[in-house]
Length: 110
Length: 116
Image (cartoon, rainbow over all chains, first blue to last red):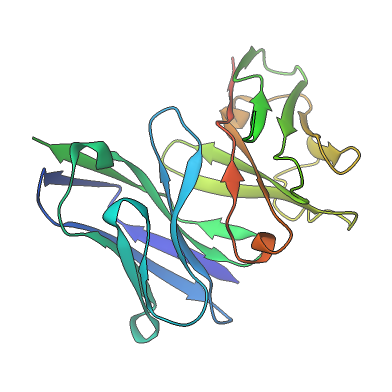
């Protein structure tokens, strides 16, 4: 069985501030972990993924995430938020079928 | 187009009617998924097709829901006797054979279903 918990349905930051979106997972086997982003009125697209190897993963648009097995976490970060980062972000765990979290809406103010 | 195509983009129906939602995956993608996205609930897995294997139907919420995939390409999700709680965005995704096992799913823009 696998599950994902995203802490905070909404996160608000100012432009230029650090972005931190939290994700904790539960998995009975070593997990593959993902972050997807959904911009308004669009489908989801992959930001980054962890499968094996290096635990710090870099994705598109300056985002990165670190897999911490001891904390069962895969938090998403970006050093400096842009207005264009406003979207909904989903953490997911799994292999052939993915289990998604409920999503975190990132709001960026000028 | 090059992406996953879903139709209709919006569907309004009356309670008790049947609806069909269509998904046209990216050419060459052997894996196809249906998810349901409800407000504040994230994405709920419904069904997964991989090549000619029997589909994984473990996420279908009731026997009113069914899906088929013809010729290993286009898929149709059918909801019979729709209920108001079926209102949601239905997302289709596809993936390459290898990437199907590493989670890089390519999503369509979804079909928004409203049941009155």
